[in-house]
Amino acid sequence: MRGIMMLPLAVLLLSACGEEPKDKRQTIDSKTVDKALAGQAIPIELEPIRLPDIEKHQLYGTSCAFAPEGGGVGAVAIAMEDAGYLKIRKEVRRFASDKGSAKLLFGTHVEHDGLANSFDLEPVGPVPEAELGSVTFPGRITVRDDHERVVYQRSGEIQCNRQ
Image 1 (cartoon, one colour):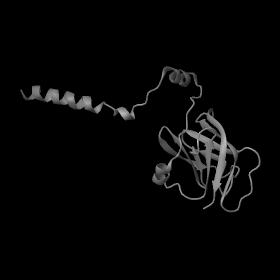
Image 2 (cartoon, rainbow, N blue to C red):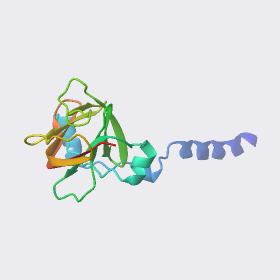
Image 3 (cartoon, rainbow, N blue to C red):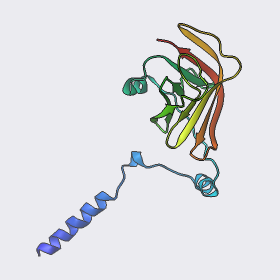
Image 4 (tube, rainbow, N blue to C red):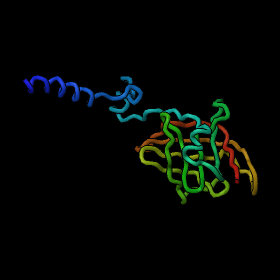
């Protein structure tokens, strides 16, 4: 009798263990699967890094931020002296600044490396001189996957601020 009562309880517990929260599931369409299997780059979209993200990750201080053309004023990339940041799939990701790469302004660098992606924040044309305050100039961002394939590239504006 005792074994009979334990069986439904065990089944209930096991079924609860295998469920993922619905908000954590990621929907992948067949074209994305086909591209991954074929070894092709899977494009990504960057999301604006907003004030709550800046506060949560303490992204204060001297930096260069990139906003794509037609994307409003929201920065999708932030480069600081030691790190760069992108927001991909609602997650702010940290990248190490490549200290051997070209410099932007105020100690920031062009190249940033992460575990699954890397990104370059490049000026288009000459970088204006600036000692204090803020300066804005045309630029481009290129994000690559772990096989060095381009998964995101946009032109826009880079704004560097010294604090």
